[in-house]
Amino acid sequence: MKDKWAMCAMGAWLTGTIVVSVVATENFYTIDRLLEQSPNSAFTAVAGRLGSGEARDLLRYLSSELNRLYFQLWNLTQFALGALVFWLLAGNRAAARARWGVASMLALVVLMSVWLTPQIIAVGRSLDFVPRDPPPPALAQFGMLHGLYTSLEGIKLLIGAVVTYWIARGADAPRAGVAPI
Image 1 (cartoon, rainbow, N blue to C red):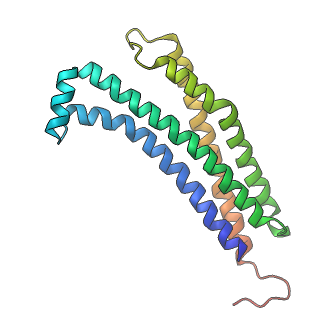
Image 2 (cartoon, rainbow, N blue to C red; image 1 turned 180 degrees about the vertical axis):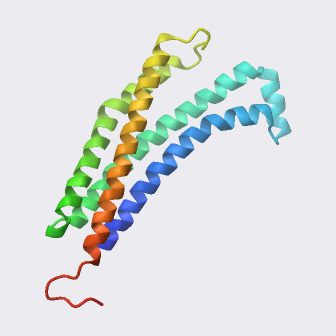
Image 3 (tube, one colour; image 1 turned 135 degrees about the vertical axis):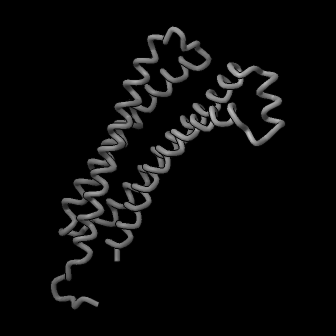
């Protein structure tokens, strides 16, 4: 039964990883969509009074702050999900590989939470309201940090898929002395 709950928690972890990535990306694309063609006339009027450049900067700042919050909250949530999966797999000798995978995922979350996310936030905030033409030097650093974060998320997602597969395989194996239902 614990294996099934571990798979459920892994599903939440993997789904959350994908959802947070999609939401963060869409936050920025939505700005341009709204500024180009908003269905809300009051928004269009306010954005027009601000001017498209200032409205875009203000909305990008809001989007950036929301994404910063989402990633920090998601990192905390990942600790909880990872700890839950690890606990659910404790004592299950057949799940040793899965526990190592979860430990690897948690190690990546620690790296991202303690070092990478604060770096992205600091560099990102230094770029808020800074003109992009010519590109400021910190923009290249931000791109590199963001690329590293995305790569680590992809690696974590891949490890998570493998861990979920291992748990599922172990959950399907009959236990010694227990007849399958």
